[in-house]
Image (cartoon, rainbow, N blue to C red; front, top):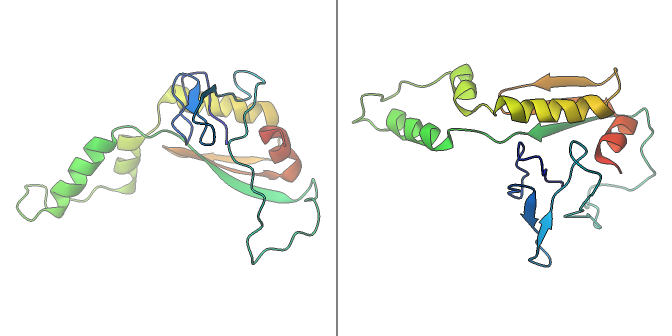
Length: 153
């Protein structure tokens, strides 16, 4: 898992201003992604295969893969307040539920975060990749070759 030192994207481990805490050594390290620098830090390397899986061989470069890139959501405290309001029979907002689009607009990632991820994906994915953007994430369907290039594996 990579963090980003461009101050636009916050990684799953809480990278802020390009720094993250190494879970093994408890030392602060600099995060890196393709959008900023070539320095890379591996935060987790799976050595165990789930019991229902079988290791056969490396994936074909043409094999299609699917993954999601989550973006930092906004207004989560406001969303929780609204949740409790619509759930409280004593509230004026009781059962006035939001639509999926309304929730998406409320929690949408910052435009600069989306642009940073878009630039990162555009730099590595082939024209055959299918990229779908939502308010707070990106769905990617691409070849194993594209994914290897994207994640530098």
